[in-house]
Image 1: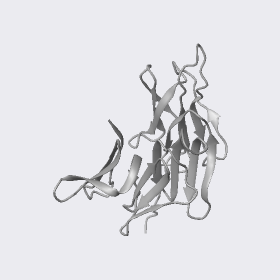
Image 2 (image 1 turned 90 degrees about the vertical axis):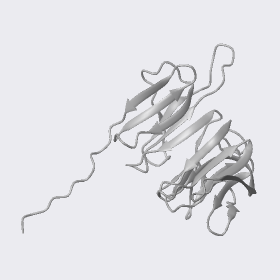
Image 3 (image 1 turned 180 degrees about the vertical axis):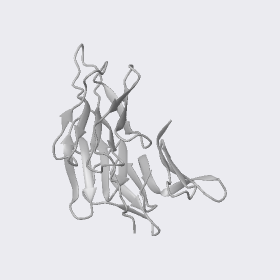
Length: 212
């Protein structure tokens, strides 16, 4: 079962897939898939806006450019989800290093934004880079759960708050933003289906021209 798949958003036709710890790359010209032996233990993959490929592994986070793969020092291991974009890379790491949401930028390096042992997923709003949502889900422990559901940050991970009103369960396993509808978040749960929530966001900026 694949644990991660990524499509290069630049329209190059490149696709990457992580399965069983092996990274497979699809050649854009021929459509042929081939394993990349230069990286082992791949868990999730994602293309950045500059075309570089990121991957989480059991030993850390790696980045591939035209030169090859580089494992970033101090990066979290065991990341279940990686989300690069706008100069910031987010990693949901439920295992390995200190579990939680990790953030990275070239100036500050890696930093823990949210500690949570049941973290499953993280997403960044395409219209507001500092707007993050995270999914926290723990397996049932008798009749109780330590899951925290949906966690929201509007300041790039400095502060977080819960956003679970109306959900049938707080065992949340996936989160995403709808790129076609500003403010709409999609929430996947364990056994209770998918839900949507519309978050308030400022309207997009408008430009006006005065008659010349």
